[in-house]
Image 1: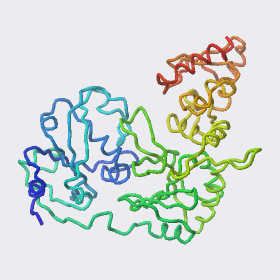
Image 2: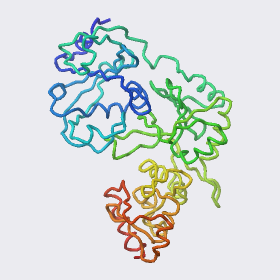
Image 3: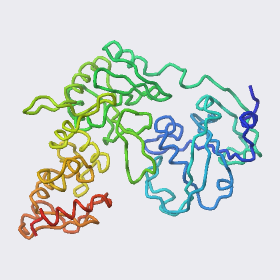
Image 4: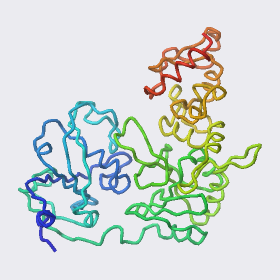
Length: 425
């Protein structure tokens, strides 16, 4: 085994002179999370975090590769990947920092890099521990050619270790679930059309379900006794391969997302029962699925039925984009409606399923919008019909200065239709 990290680089035919070493610190982020935990739980978020750096630092701009490290505990340094890097531009980025939740660079322009994980040292990711020099513990970014990183240990790989949540996986297997896939962070299990994931190493809220069930959070808490994030939020991880793509203005990449919760094994059967019952919609024509599998995706008719009543992919996409009513900031799921901008009756099948033809609105805002008593400009300014009296405007809590945030160019044609053919000026 190589004695130093540079020996590994040379054995992979990579010159240390082309490599920069990044050791991410242990300071706490959102909810006390460390950067090691961000790497372990949200690889996309971790890579997005390190893709921006302070402006005009030659150390970053001149290196072809970044060797990334994180600290799982004080005094420990573990290898998290070798990235091929190219400088893109310097700008104010549009997304929030996935680690701190605040504006990247405090809202100032930063250098933005494109990073691509290289395969050469992939077997060492999460397994290789090095001794970062204590004399330069604060020098978190270094030239590899000037550093001697002694290798402390090289295994075993995280993918080979038993899951800390193996008891939960085994309980699901006893219930007839089949283990379909496993990564360093997640185990995928399936029974029929129900797909779930179990976090392998994270003990808090280890059970991950389809984001469609976000609306059932209160039912799951009451009837299955699950533990929930407070406030409720999505769990984002690129390894949720069978779940929807998460698209947000604050993320440059496209991860996938689910809904994480905690459950006691004695309540697991009840939870699965609620999930299976909740994944179908009862209609006059019979049961319709609201969630499909990659092998048996939802038919267009099933998707249309789900969209018609504001469930399924249509509502899930709106929840992912806004999470709250962008007018009132109401975030109680049972009070939010998946509202079509161009009404269902006059929309084409494609338009009925297009999430850009939708807004996530509080129930009373949805009623006003649906009846043409309010509308919005392309940049989100609220328009109020003259048919509403000043007294009712006050009673409804409408603020003429309110603005609908989160709109994009693809909303504009639908909003133009609403203003022209629905809004009652």
